[in-house]
Length: 340
Ligand SMILES: NC(=O)c1ccc[n+]([C@@H]2O[C@H](COP(=O)([O-])OP(=O)(O)OC[C@H]3O[C@@H](n4cnc5c(N)ncnc54)[C@H](O)[C@@H]3O)[C@@H](O)[C@H]2O)c1
Image (cartoon, rainbow, N blue to C red; front, side):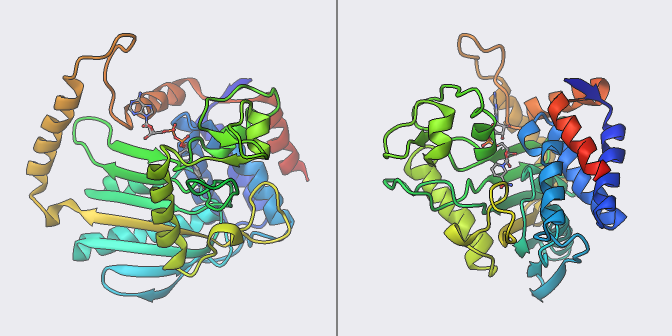
């Protein structure tokens, strides 16, 4: 495992994608989103996905040259067609559109269809927060999670993110899969058959899986029972039912099916804070709100109470200084992408 400066990884990543036919501006966008996740310590959704996207481009199931475009729109809403390009490219396009609409007309909500895996959801909500908006985003994903009470996969891990800007500190950024565990995380634990906590997954027979390989071969469970199940439905309806993307079992696989495109859907929203209250008042009140969280006495074994987004911000400071750790095997794969 070596640490690489962000700039080096950016250059490698952009060159690899450009070699596959991705225009420079789109390559830069996709790599930016991947590196944001790597900087935040979300290694499962960072630069590690580069070889997967490259393989999908080479197999012809991602169109490297696709230009996203608006299908329908109003002052506050739009549907964007990603045209089977890189998910990050369509999602950044949609995020920018949602922010423009929110700043002009108070709110902007943009759905995306014909898209692909777009990585860490909070990248998109954070862009809204950087523009004095509240960011909201969901996506659907390949079927791997059982509905509550079921033992067959139906939903994707369907992550949800919200971001709220803070003036004198990192934004509050909530971002998690609605499954008990992100599928990529479980996949990364399969090789050494690591034990997994009860409630993460069922084995093939429908009983609680005890190890990662059993769970990966079986089915993931929703986070928090009916609560994650409900949120998975929210993500699926917003991302796919109202955008025209594929839903549940029709979403194409990402790492286990290179024969067809995914047709993933996303739903990205921005709400202008100023449409509710003067920004100054918001930031002062938010400061007091955060302080009320920070004032809570930590439970034994915890040094402080953190809010979502704080840990990631700290990780980013460390990784900007020390570089991003990349496993040797992954770097070999990335180099192989560059050579082929
Ligand atoms: N694109 C896709 O299809 C897809 C699918 C699934 C997951 N993902 C991404 O995978 C990533 C990981 O998802 P996950 O479900 O494993 O997330 P997770 O279970 O690690 O939860 C992360 C959330 O918990 C917060 N958090 C963690 N520790 C905390 C603490 N001590 N105090 C306060 N808050 C804390 C984080 O700030 C973050 O909001 C996310 O970025 C998600 O967007 C993407």
